[in-house]
Amino acid sequence: MKPTGTAVDSDIQGVKMKDYPVSKQFQVKPDYNLGVCILASGSKGNAIFISSGDTSLLIDAGLSGIEIERRLRSRGLDPKDLNAILVSHEHSDHIQGVGVLSRRYKLPVYINSKTREAAVSQLGNLHDFKKFECGSMFSINDLSIHPFSISHDAEDPCGFTVNQNGTKVGIATDLGIATSMVKEHLKGCTLLILEANHDEQMLINGPYPWPVKQRVKSRTGHLSNAATKTLLNELQHDGLRHVMLAHLSETNNTPQKAVNEVARALTRCKARLEVALQDKCGALLRFK
Ligand SMILES: [Zn+2]
Ligand SMILES: [Zn+2]
Image (cartoon, rainbow, N blue to C red; front, side):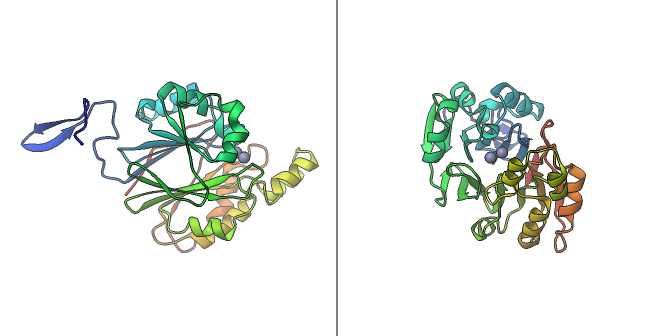
């Protein structure tokens, strides 16, 4: 079907090319398959922007709508270019801005039934919602998305892989243990966004009440730096280019401790290792 309105053919310096509107900066087909920007990561709010150029998503929107808009714009991204929001689970650090962004930009929200039920009052009316099931792949335009179950104290929590033309991004935060199913899904990624929530000693010696420490450490809590090191050691492969450590505790971890511990896993590949922050929007990473 011929695109309506916005895209027109133009002939620049003798080369036939598409002329897209200026705001659609991702739409001039870039020389990469996926662009990824972690807008925020941690217990005060999580949101990840992923785009193929033609299709742009948010995975979780756990800051206010205004703050997510601000962070997108700080990286030259226009919230109007978003096509959908995907929700991993109902904890408020993942859904705070979902309802407002869905209504403001008329975005469908992809969410599973149990998560939607648990989040219904916080989400309010959505422009549209699309149901997915953990374990069942679906597509949004040119993006293939595979949600998979993770072990966390929510109704039906999931991680995601997003695949475009062989470039694969794997996202797993908010999980107490990395099950064999999680490992299976995260194989072969170009970019891994993995939780490195706490340093075990800092958690044990830290200020949290004992029941909260137990919850964080449990099979339905959060991954420690040491657990993430073990996971990454198994997942590393030649094609792994970048690892972002995510959902770090501000009380029970430091970026330095997380990097120092997890870096020891990367013995067989040259992936870059970085930390996603709570207060600062990450760079826009591009992957072929
Ligand atoms: Zn969380
Ligand atoms: Zn959570």
